[in-house]
Length: 77
Image (cartoon, rainbow, N blue to C red):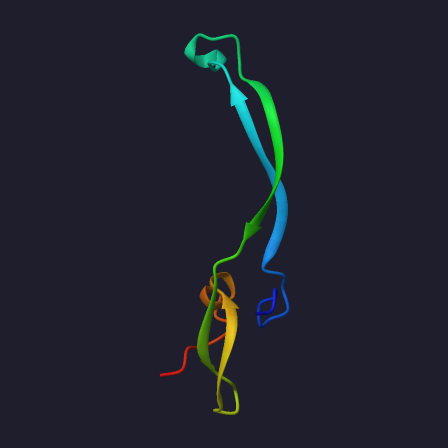
């Protein structure tokens, strides 16, 4: 399967997972300390759905839910 949405946007983006240890200052502690940072991928909620094109044709493509909720595509009935 392709790693892009039908609109051309990438399905994955990079980020960090930060591990913290300790009690927050507002709860009476000395603060949170970072004990580890790990690289990770944030994956979009991509689904293979049947969409209806502007000319009326129906096609099965991989679409992320962000694009579907934005109204860029309409589901085929």
